[in-house]
Image 1: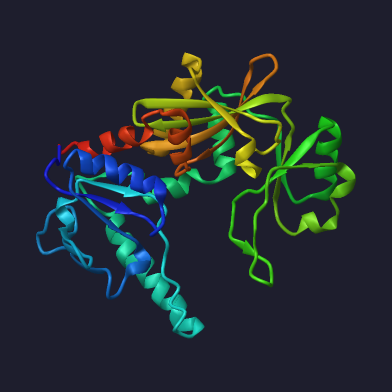
Image 2: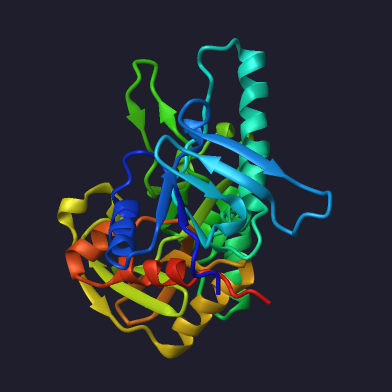
Length: 322
């Protein structure tokens, strides 16, 4: 194990969830360096060397205003909620060029570290974010998935909604969205009827799903070998719409479901992930989706479950060195 080096935490400035893990690492005396890719420039510099008989990992240093760390000594990398610079002081072509150099220079170097435990590797996160892949893998592992249609064909969409009677619409990927006046907007899971969809759906694929007659939701946070399942009770179709309306209770999952979720992460090469499921009146579990880098900090505060400690365990251990 690479026990001596620091843990690198890559995240935005205001990240309470990362703070919880860093506090846990500090208690254990584990060195931590925190930075955000958008700090590149005066607040973050990189020098990485490759080739010429060097080891399999990049050699060099990352420097922040307070720390200098050797790339080859990074014990673990916690890829939380990084932001990338947009170079607003440059004109558009130069800004796009500069942003690409940061993503492929700084990002590419961080992706190439050897003898380092990733929680999670950024490319593994990206591979696991595609909902069609998520749905297919969930079914392969024996999890129950609601009937789902991804389509931009108006006739097929209307037929699907009519067939299932009650249906919902979900985004295939969340993206930042602001009105002309700068007010941020978001899209919740919404009910949809056949007569509500029109020709505008033919522009891009959309995700429609049969509505599950649920009595509660589950958020399951898997961290290495540890599984934290929390029942979320509310009257909401999408519980994210109003956190003040929620109540929480830790629960135990059926052994076969717990095993399937850990195998799910193994399939995508992930060390952790946040799953959303729901429970029907008959006690059946339906798998809904995975967020490979989902939020969980408020769940620890609400339930007392030691989730931050589980993340600190993985990061403190580092990676096995052959």
